[in-house]
Length: 404
Image (cartoon, rainbow, N blue to C red):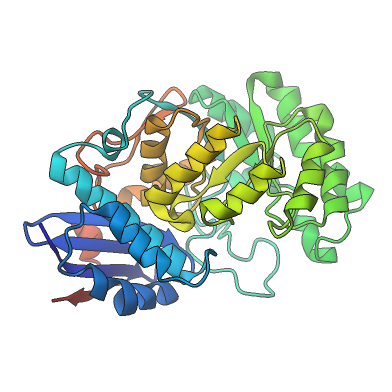
C-alpha cells in the first residue's frame, strides 16, 4: 500500500477551505481539510509534502507526521502547520480504511458512544463564503442576509434581539449549550483597548434574555475572539459573572501566558483557549502557568489528529478537559467527533447547525449523527466520509494533483 497521488481541492464558493486527498495504489482515498489561506497551504502540500509522501506507506502515520513536522523551523499555525494538519487527517483516514475500523477505534476507543454537542450561533455564511480582509470591520465576512434558511442564528441574536428564541429552539432539539459573541462589535472602535459601560450593558443583554427565558436549562459560552486587552476583558468578565457562563473563550491574544493566567485567576468561570494555538509546546506553557481551564484546539490547525491526541493527553495530566473547535468545515467536525469518542477527558463538541444542516451536506457523503443534543462519529472505516462526487464535478471546484 503506497501513496501514488496527492490532490488539493478548492472552490470559490468556500474560499477559506482546502481539502487534501491522498490516493493509494490499491484504490483507497484518504481525506483531510484545513481552513484559511488555501493558496499558501496548497503551495506547501505540492512543493514540500507531496514529493515526500509519494511512494510511502501511509500507515506509518507517526513517522510521516514527525518527518514533515521536523522539517519546519517553527511550531506556529502557519501554512505549513495547516497543511500538515490536513495531511495527518488523511493519513489516519487511510489507516482506518486499511484495517476496516473507524478512526476512533484505531485511537483505542471508544470510551463513550456519543458526546454532548453545543451550538455556535453563527449563520450560513459565517466565515465561509467570504474572507475577512485586514482592516475590514465587524461582520464583514459573516454573510448575514445573503443566505436563506431556518438557522441564521447570528442575525437573529445579534440584530433581531431573538437570543431567547434561539435558546428555546435549541432546547427543542435537545441541545443544552450555546455560544455567542455580542462584544465583538465594539472592539473595532477602540482596537480592543477600551469598552464603555454602555457597550458592556448592550453586550450583556442577549445573555440576560436567554436566562430570563429558559433559566439555567441552557449553558452559555462566551466567545471573545482574542479581541481585547486584559483590562477590557476583565471588565466584560466581571459584568457577566451574574450570568454564570459555561466559559470565557480566548479573552485576549494568546501571546502572553502570564496575562492569560492573570485573567483566569480573577474569575470563577473557566477560561477556554485556544483554537489559535498550534502544537503541544504552546499548550504546555499555558497549562504550566494555570492559564487554561478548558483546552480548545482545532484539529485542522493544531497538527491534525496526531497532535490533537497528544495535547488532549497533556490536558488530562493537568486535570483539564478538552473541547474540539469547529466553525470551519465538515472534516474538522468529523475528526473532532472521532477524537471525542476516543479520549477520556473530552468535554463537549462544537457544532454549527447552519453548517451541518446546510452546506456541509452538499460537500461530504456522511456527517456525524446527532440525537437529542449528542453527536456520534460516522461508523464507517477511517473517517467514515468522502467528498461527494457531485461536489467534485462542479465547475467551480479546482483539483490540483501531484503524482509519481
